[in-house]
Length: 221
Length: 199
Image (cartoon, rainbow over all chains, first blue to last red; front, side, top):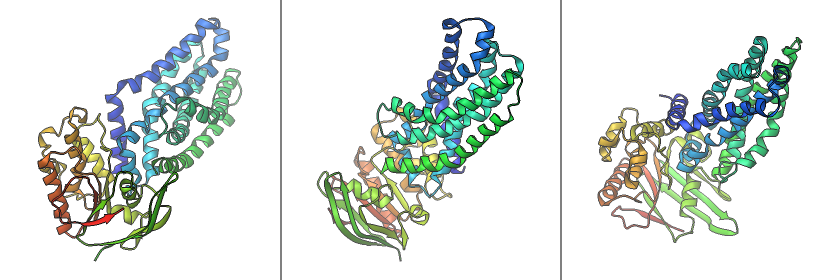
């Protein structure tokens, strides 16, 4: 098996054997969204208006919660050292790790989002747009998050620092995604917002693995 | 003939100068023990030789390939202090992943290495359930499978029993007999016929 496929299989195996790492961010996503109808107003009109923001903020925070697992264990047990000095491309292996993080965190959020949309009284069309924005946006969250995780990998209890580093970088995704859903609710065209989300995804795909590889190299030195 | 060159190597950690202007040339079949008191920079030197850390001055090359090149990395096997295994994977899964990261002999089965290291009966055991010595043996199985010419071993005998130490010494000797070069650190006495690099 080549290194890239074996990295993907390894990441998935480790996550499946640690179900808490997999389930906790999802439970956080569901619980956070459930709190809003209880604390604001259970009226359908109000909830459907604020639903895009609520779901997207909950998705961002859930992804943020799980970022620490991307490199933390491998840093502690020395696997990152072996990766860093192997003759394979560290950046490509990191890209695979980001992809597996998305499969385990982002994809379940995308799949759960219709239920959460219904819970907040979103109409069918808006739920489709919500799923589309999450499908394009959550891989960017994983890729950008990987940069943050690689920067703080050697620091103990750096959860708050990670949030401070990463959340500002998530803002454009949040703006375009929630704006797309709101615009579609109002019956406007959303091509612009979707294209911007794709541009952010492409930039993240191009830059994140290389920045993360450089950050890991510095942390391992 | 292979040449491993260390040229004018210096390393400083914080305000502490660990070593300065080290020069050494290792030839085929050489076994070199890096000696020095605690804190003298033995591990730092091995990490620099592996390409993990950058020296403050100087360079390392193997057959004219510098330490930041892919050709150099293919010829290097570095086993450090860390176990380099995941506790959530079993022995064979960990070894297979280490193989995919390193330059190993594809004709050899992983099970062959585990048999040699006395772990054949533990191949499906999760590493979480292994003793410290057994965990160490998982990563040391790479010595059986590696095709790299230069081995960099940081305290390879730690946590091993006397039989384990003998086995690792025989693997190092076999590597040397095949023309390989091995740098290692150890605070234990060894029966190997080695040269010394004192820091």
